[in-house]
Image 1 (cartoon, rainbow, N blue to C red):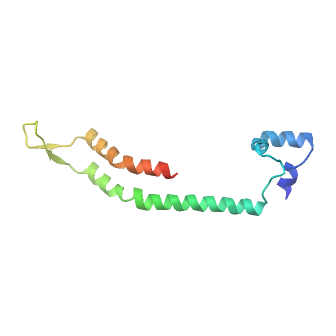
Image 2: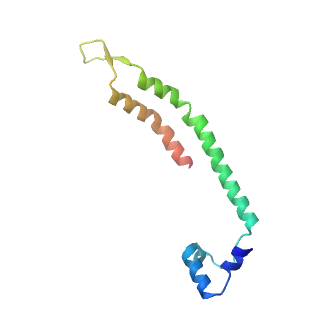
Image 3: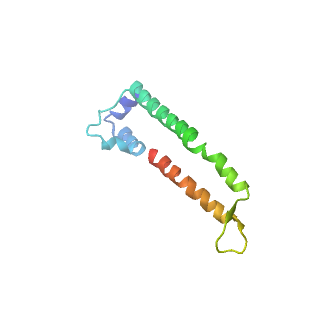
Length: 116
């Protein structure tokens, strides 16, 4: 193909421009080690489909189940018993709610980042 022909040229000007444009070309053991365009396309399709399926799975089975409980936690007035207060029921303030949400989401975010 044309790209293989350009990469394998001995012309100084073209090889200099390609060295600036594509610096990873020097990392190969041999400069004539190139895959065909068809193999390259299938390689890219494989990785794109794998990442798409991973994002789909992670969204629907890790992240989406947490959304209703998070909304409920942030919009509802939550009362809890306090041992150090005069009143029996205390309401949870917004900073404490945010802390609870962060602590709830933290393991899922860590697993999500590890999966990437």
